[in-house]
Length: 110
Image 1 (cartoon, rainbow, N blue to C red):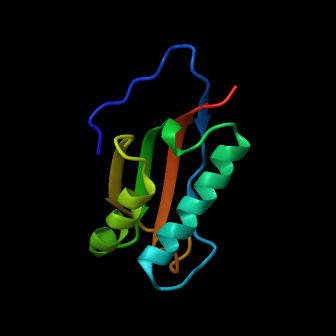
Image 2 (image 1 turned 135 degrees about the vertical axis):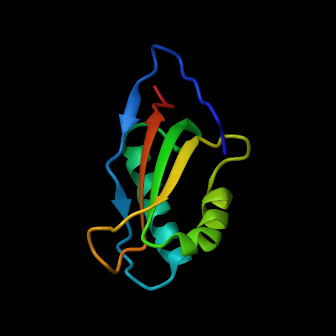
């Protein structure tokens, strides 16, 4: 986890809305993988990828899921490229949802 991330003043920023899983199984790892795949797809559409992440906010329905979610998150991140991150417990829009992730990234392709 990074304490600070900087980007050039000329960087194009990409703001994603909070993403939730389409798979409403009761497995936090499965829901986390689903959300991260959606983020990959949206970043690609915007001309970026996870190497361009600068910030992430993660909401968990239950902080008891943190220990199962965090390894999935860590494995997904490129080595040495962690964004700043906050992770908190919150009531989500649908009680079947276990996680929501919102990210900000810089455009990585011309």
